[in-house]
Image (cartoon, rainbow, N blue to C red; front, side, top):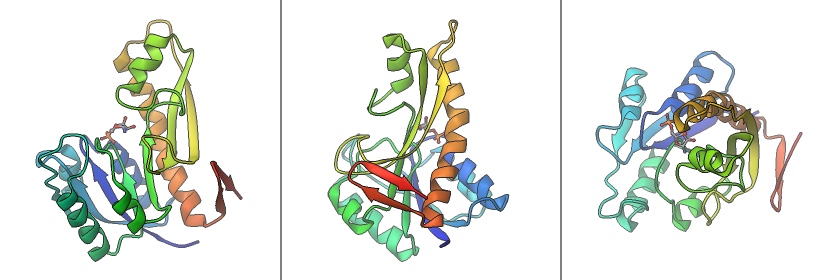
Amino acid sequence: MAKLHLGVLGSGSGSNMQSIVDAIEAGTLDAEIKVVLADFPDAKILDRARKHNIPCQFLDCSPWKTKLADAAEENCIKILKDAGVDTVVLAGFMRIVKPKLLEAFPNRVLNIHPALLPAFPGVHSWTQALDYGCKVAGVTVHFVDAGTDSGPIIVQKAVPVLEDDTPETLHARIQVQEHIAFPEALNILASGKYRIEGRRVRIG
Ligand code: GRF
């Protein structure tokens, strides 16, 4: 077991970061969040971090909307390294991270995606699942590689799609599982009892 030193990147409400904070505070996850970065100055994830006295700051990623500008990426790596981060958690971070960040934290960048990958990568995946007529949807926590939502899978959780679901009700059901899946995946990392063999993450 090795305590995780986490850096969390987010763009929105931060409910996934909250689930990690809650697991740490409950003593069910051996980790410390060293720093939280958000690409919007008023992102709620920053308020949540402040409430728990976790160092946090706005990461200016302009001029791009969907990726990290080179300067922002370098700044991001520096902040994470200076904070003593060994594991980077993308918790609703709506930007594609680039190779430099992945190289700075090899096999230590995790993402959560609200779909059962490889189905429905990209945005609004719960709406994609609903529109496709899926009877089952879910969430995936995976290592990040150079692709989009394509790295080796650590944890998946499924939820039923109900007859009267709207995108909102389905997303809410998926989010309940997200908040279980992320701490679970981080516990696997902390245990050290896993190995990555090609696409497969062998646990135990
Ligand atoms: C989650 O649905 C996550 O799966 C997706 O973005 C959303 C972030 O939610 N990548 P939150 O900011 O953690 O509440």
